Image (cartoon, rainbow, N blue to C red; front, side, top):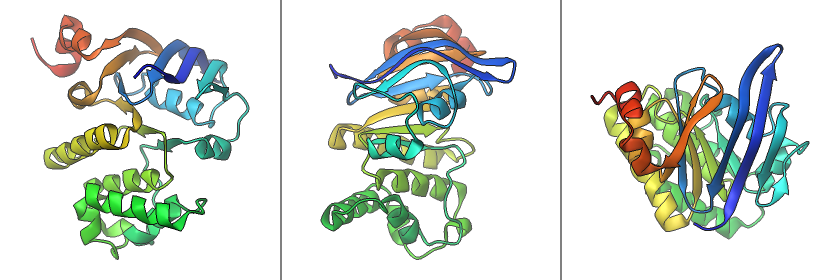
Length: 239
């Protein structure tokens, strides 16, 4: 993990007169899981939306050495940076299989698409069991798996996940965590994980940042967070 894949420097975002992100800086290395934790409204989603090209910002964002300023969202996707939003953005009346194929709609290599379909179904056996089921009829946990699976069908080099465990049962959260570690270890995928569920992020991230009221308050390796009394008491519930 020696090469920087995503570099954010002095990122500022405004909603009207509201200063939502205040000089946020962080760098993510190839092949790591990077967690961004913090309370609801702290700025996690705003940061991901800026990276994905959905928001105007001040500062700089570069991906794989390329400045993303002014880049359309589609070009960012084509560069290998894929965003799985909190809303999941599934096609509700499409089947599981059809939703997955929509993730690969801009890919021409049919053999590679089939390989990735096999990988997704192997990663999430529940999706394999429900190939023909409409997305809207699935549980929240199954929909989250489908959202991640569809993002993977875009063949990402880096995957950004916004609150992937929100509202999910513990057994599904465990499945999601195992899938992320498999993707990192076996596929070499780089993952940016924004989570209110600090315990989940701490369990799976190599490095993390804590964001509060739009500012980075702490950044460092996993152990630095687990040993920090404030993080333990405020976000993990350990005293």
